[in-house]
Length: 265
Image 1: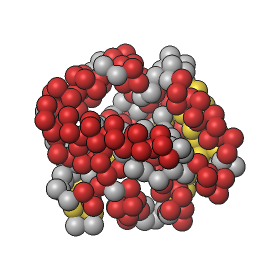
Image 2: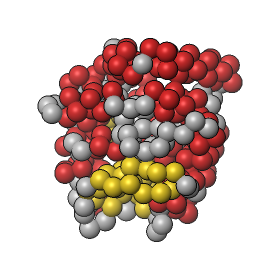
Image 3: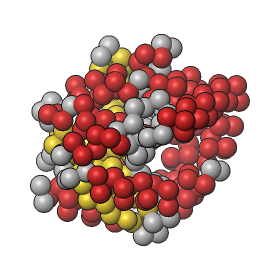
């Protein structure tokens, strides 16, 4: 079921899968709430997933201030009343981790798939800001279809071609339905470079956390091994035969892992 809700004065698209208890799903860059459609039926509880600002059926305001991590933390925090579990993938995982740091009283637990706490080195962070700005300009100048073709050829995204039918086709179609302005501003406002690094505060995040990466996603697996060592209540699991998008590439395996994590809390 889909509907529109107003959050902080903006219209947000929300997708629901019913269950006795729901968790909040936060999708990755260029995705939408519907990206959880492959895994939701295998979970032992419901999912309430948001189209993040600039994506899907959510508003795409011109003002960059709406796209910042701080503003999105406020928006998602307003949904977490009462506190709930948060499931975030990639960009959504970075946002979920920021929620756990900034609004821990609203979060019962965190499930992060292919996520990162940000970039610790200031020089590398600035280089990523410049790269994201160049990509944002490219999206606006070349258009969504060209961007999507180029994006899907990137090594970290390429494993998505193995997502089973019809979910892979739907994912690619939804990516092309996004707004160029929305995606460009999302990069400028909450890209990995502009997001504050949380590496130095990971040891303070004591909310139960499940870290998930695909075995073929070597970069993020290494990042998450380090995260698990730094976070006192985090556990890292690697999913075989999966890349960056493990919850769509291996939805049953990831759902089984999540069900066990939630049941043990």
